[in-house]
Image (cartoon, rainbow, N blue to C red):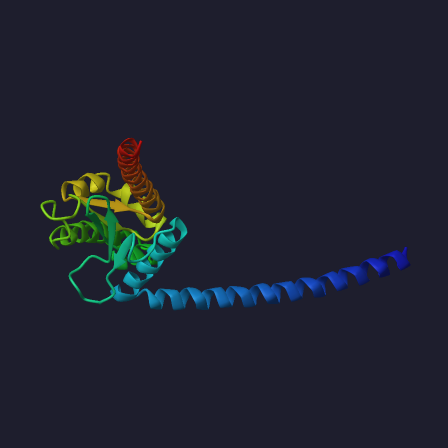
Length: 228
């Protein structure tokens, strides 16, 4: 019995050492994750950085769908310009504009505070910021139905949880945005919209090529009849 107890204690000691090693590695990983989160929060503390983050997100979606810059879309790279961040090219020389900058300062405060009053105050301010952003985009001249654009513009909310939070806390925000000719979209809904655009462009291109082919066949038939 003493021998068995000695063996069990030896195994327990070895397992304890392994567990301490794993805990140390876990503590190290948590520390690195905390540092990374702090750096990310610091990076996204400015409007310009958040705009660049949104642009990178859109670029990844466009790359995945297969859009080519200069062919399917153009991107505004100059900061501080009153031009849309992205312009998507549609059939018949039409286009669709999109802005990717969105205020999340008070949303961060809402998440950080545990005080109920401060939390409610931050939430109300964030919802107000969202509506003000919609109004701001609607006044920027991104929509020109008499020119070449569609009669609405896309406004990206570059985070699914923020998009869901807005829909949950402000049920009338979507209707309010549509009244301003603004379509709010999250990364997932943006992917769906751009996929539809790509399919529409592809169908239009196939239809035009089919028409050109039909015209060429008719011309060939005429020439063949004359030859015969």
